[in-house]
Image (cartoon, rainbow, N blue to C red; front, side, top):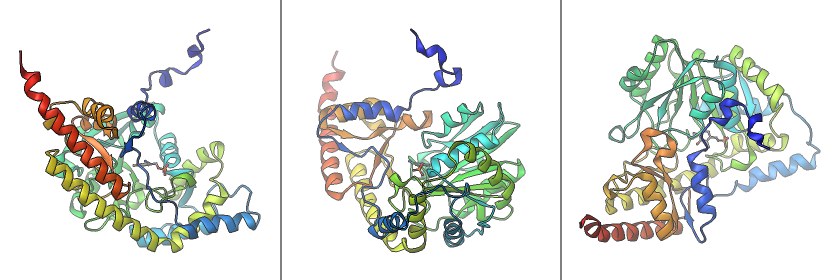
Length: 397
Ligand code: PMP
């Protein structure tokens, strides 16, 4: 029996994630050094884990309010003022979600009508394009370029914009490029959003991991709070990927719309994880800053090594990914990543997994120990030497 006839058309036509395909291959290869997965190598700081243990000891094993624990929403509100320079009312402008993943899904489901156009910069996080397609929206990718450090520029946005476009998704600092925007660039994007009456979904999950300059939230710019949903979570900066806590902040009417979808699907995030999140947001800054310093050192090392090897790599200003060009190898990004995996057992992700504009680049995550980065870069260098030594042969008739 062909069970696939039961699958909805828009799901059948959804392409599988390029990352997933690649990692199935990685899983079949032994002794791989992986710079592939986008998650901290650090375990969650212990005082945060303890808060969860205490919560269990106190019998906190129940559902919470759909919006999330009031104490967590108050902690988010205080944290938001410090980190993003925006003030949100914990009673009706904050919704706690199951990771930023759920917050993104809720936002698309709550705000996109079939046929609505959604702008987002690309290369970008793998879920944006399919999530927009799943709600029958129309994705409008806006290219970003290595020459700009992959910052989104308002000119490219103007070029990609179509009449009727409704939403702009931003991810600054960006996965996979590490690109971000300074205040002046963000001012221009904000002016564009106001001029064209766009709702901005601002995924700032890497905000704390900004290495140079300040992180500016678009929500903090004049006239933007009322048209922005700020999405943030604890997975990256606090090394809490497995706890699955994120949140959305925005105008009460929009948060209420997202909450309606959330209450019929997830109902609430895990209470134990919410208790841990209170601890992270109120007392987790020292541990977070120590991890950030490690990421910065690793970034400097990895980017220097890529450039020394001839893989041109801009300095990512945030997040924990290097995004070198592999064009000099004469191979496509996928061919290069596959040959590196096969010959030297190092996993990096082909840039085209992050959209057509990522072609010719690869993503290497530096949330990995220094020893692993040392070994991985030696292997990559050896692989490049091997490719170079083969070049003249390949050119022979
Ligand atoms: N947004 C971006 C840009 C990401 O890189 C990720 C995770 N890789 C997420 C959202 C989702 O994170 P989580 O669901 O763990 O909060």
